[in-house]
Length: 318
Ligand code: UDP
Ligand code: MG
Figure (spheres, rainbow, N blue to C red):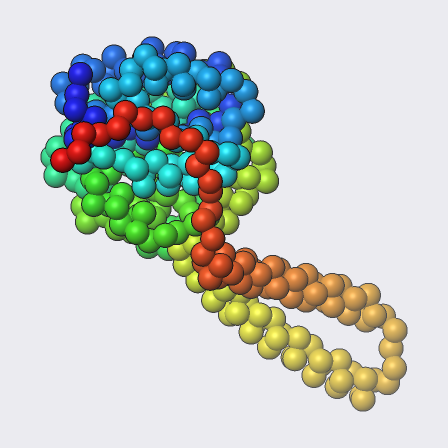
């Protein structure tokens, strides 16, 4: 259909154990893209799925070799690294990301492209009717507030992966060599003219979310610590206030000891204060550890994922 060497649009989809969703995804996605009338490619990354996702992707590549490419990871490296691997390989001028579980309806892609055509280099989807658990929705609102106050990244719905980017923004993301990152936020920092557009959000077509509570916490830590030093700085401020308070307390206690003599009542209050300060110190150490860990990973500069196989139609030599 199109020349695989120069598609206009690249659609990037991370796939982790999506066997029950892939057939419906294929059935809905390809017609939408075929109807656009622009040359396109779809780059799937199989993120170490343990089910038959890779077989389905292989069959799909055989069925539509002109527009289908598959990056096959040897293990599970996470959604954002899966997207990163595809970003490194995209050939299109415009790149759209999408989840494989049909929570982001493929039918909404043209809306994003309209904004790109209007001159924006970054278009973020905003889920109009979010279909996630109450806990997810509220946790996400909370993180939104924290992000708003600690970074200069402005987006209404950071969790929505239905997004479109101009190639220059994607190239900047790749060049940044970032690891453990939050791609929409990183891309935002390279965008010149960002925009948002409301998109539909559906319930997961089948299966359950791949995000465990732990993975969600990690991802949001990446979002906050990956883009600002505010947690460290706020902590230092807080520690200073605590130190001043404790110093005053010591003065008061010393005064009482000298004037009123020995007294035992205050001992539990003191314990309380000591435990509080200890926990503050522990949070601080953890926070520093977070940054040291990030620094370590960058310094180590090790390839963060391994591609076992690449399914694609070789492009003609120029
Ligand atoms: N995903 C992935 N690797 C992972 C976890 C998820 O590639 O380790 C993919 C998954 O297949 C889906 C997208 O990332 O296409 C979003 O995952 P999920 O639907 O589980 O997350 P949620 O919608 O609950 O945020
Ligand atoms: Mg989902």
